[in-house]
Image (cartoon, rainbow, N blue to C red):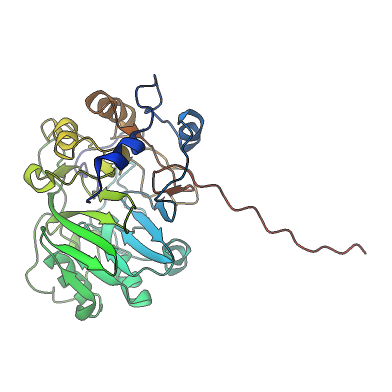
Length: 347
């Protein structure tokens, strides 16, 4: 979740170097890496020929969430879709806000997932996971805390894989590297609902404050030979040693709301080997519905972050995502299918 809950808010892989070079595109062009929208990405990016990753698609689910599809198979990361109000974005944050999940809204976005990856257990990452797990039977991958919370919600414990970081999991050709990570911190160097669980709570959590962070993970997902490796973050901090050498093609990087983590972007980009494509995430108001265009969290300076990434990694192409675009494996917008024409008979 956002790391600024106690500060009043004003309304306001394993792929080769050759592929990463292609993903960077013409980064020496004046403003090509600085994309204000996917439409600008299409307008400024150089034309490419055949893409080895054409079968892979990415959809941003808001916050840090992603849906990754490849050849009829789906992986979800941090799918928070109900997006209920807590007062976080209008200065009246209520830790006692009751948890809820809207099945109809969730079903609009998830497809038929095989695997659900959970970075940590705050509500804006896990609140819809119990419903998704029980409705789809998907394999859930997360921390011990996530395991105990989902068990309390009635998810079959045998459906949950507990990981700590360092594991490399093969899901029939979809490879998931688990990366030990850290939760972001606010201006006072703290964050909401810390703590871990080593046993299920006595009853199912009822409010957002009943969901402790429970350690944080990142994941690197590769969907097959020739496909891109995507590094997925759920919070804006990291373990430098844990990410060293991952060298992802795509890096979905959480935008920080404070400078509490020293030199966050420069250290992360260097440790990741300056990814071919950088995608800022977790900068949106996650209490607004996905049917609307993304509205920025006023605590986040997205423009300054994008400029800093460009400064620190000028060869990286930067893509600012939206909710309504499906991206290919190079994070370029996929063409929308033409509407089917109906057979209309004149009276």
